[in-house]
Image 1 (cartoon, rainbow, N blue to C red):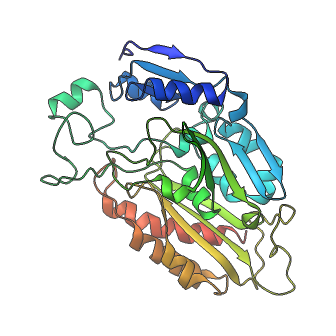
Image 2 (tube, one colour; image 1 turned 180 degrees about the vertical axis):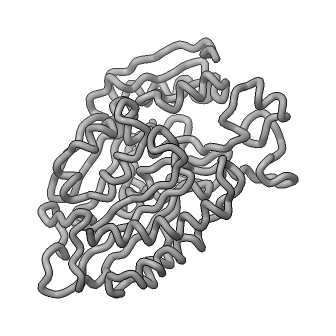
Length: 347
């Protein structure tokens, strides 16, 4: 599958990038690591006249720690996040999610911003032009019907990135640049829940950085993922969990950049505080399970609580036939993964 014709633009600054986005709005796509955009262009899912290569913008790269928390440039590679000692110590759920993405070679190219802005996926959409044409296309690209839910007017393509559920658990904020200036928005506000247009970004918007508040530092947390192969594959279901040990007199229950508690060391007498459970790949957007935060708060850390976390996560999952595995199996695996994720933190 050959690439369509396009012109590459290589800005050196954020201001130049935003200006080019505004000048070519509607005919331009942003290239970060390129690990998702380039294959999609080969499939003729995107045929822009211009590709904005932002890899040379130094302002978009790097990880910076401060009293306010952690700031990660949108162009920071997943492998850099995987290796960063501050993330390993203070934000283990993000590292746990990052190391499940594709393969080490791809993580050397793929960026955090690109993973956050990943397009939704579907068996009927992520195919060659010839394949899609033979099926009459679909709502998401060139057609007017949904093969997943025939007769429906909504696209059910699933959001299938690994890092957003971890970032949702951490209360991540996004720094977005546009011709109107800079704005900070919660990560949850980025996603529309519509499979055909999953991101609430204008054509002139540029994701610049991801900010993790100091209050989320030191949370116990991890991420579990369902996929057919042990590497390369996108998640067919994914669950991130975080919480703080609220037991009095037990270490690992504070906040701040130095209070790293990490994964795999939760004491047996822990009381769960600031509980977060988030899911991916089973809905058109990554989702923070709000009921889990309510029902798990103050509960003891044990197998019964882990079982409840799984049940609450599964209730929020709405998988359809967008992948090679059945919706019923993927929904059940959300329950299993949430339980496994919590119990793994005691090991």
